Amino acid sequence: MNKSLWFKTFVLFTIFSHTALAQGPPITSDKPIMLGANSVVIKTLTEIRATERGTFTKIPLMGHYLPTSNSLVGLYVPLVIYNESNENESGQSLGDIELVGKYQFYRKDKTGKTFRAVAKTIQTLPTGKKLDVPAISTGNFQSYLALVTGYETLKYGISNEIGYNFVPNQDTDEIIHKFGFGLPLLKPTYPVNQLNLYFEYQSNWLVEQADYSLLYAQGIQYAKGRLTMEVAIQFPLIQTLPESMQRKYSLFLGTRYVF
Image: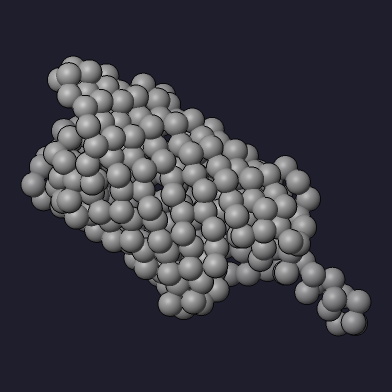
């Protein structure tokens, strides 16, 4: 391989590595692209969820640390603000704290593209008020195990997550499937300056109750250097849930910074 081709290949890999950083993760789901060893990410992703019961807001402080380039540990500490119109009750409290772990066990790189797979777990501690609002505050211990795969190129990114959420104290075990498509709107540059569109779906099967929901989220994300800002609106396409669990929409507002 001549020097010119070596140089072009190096530039493509350099741009791609930073583009992958700029593109992810998707706003309402996850992807298996990881940063380098000893990286630290501080982020938040506020969700304002309007339901038939009222409005519930989750404001988490989220920290990620990568001991190695293929492993991640995280801690999410949320503040929950609730306004239950049906019960005429409102207030704020600590939500359910989450412990996160990820391990990337497969990686296949080519020029300007990559495929990766990650094993993921989230252990939810019952620190929140028993509001019975999934993914916001239930006051129940939960254990989630999932497989996350992703295919990323300079032109687009695809992510897929399938997992099982075990809730031992309630009959609300779920099979959760998330699928996302990311589309960069600007040419890859370094330092990162990228605007991305996200199209994301989430399916929830309540195993014991035989209920189902399909959600769609449309989001936009802007990344500049190490800072990322994002916003998304999520709404139901299908809901066969009890009325108390049905939602009207969710608004997501997020930022993150990589150290």
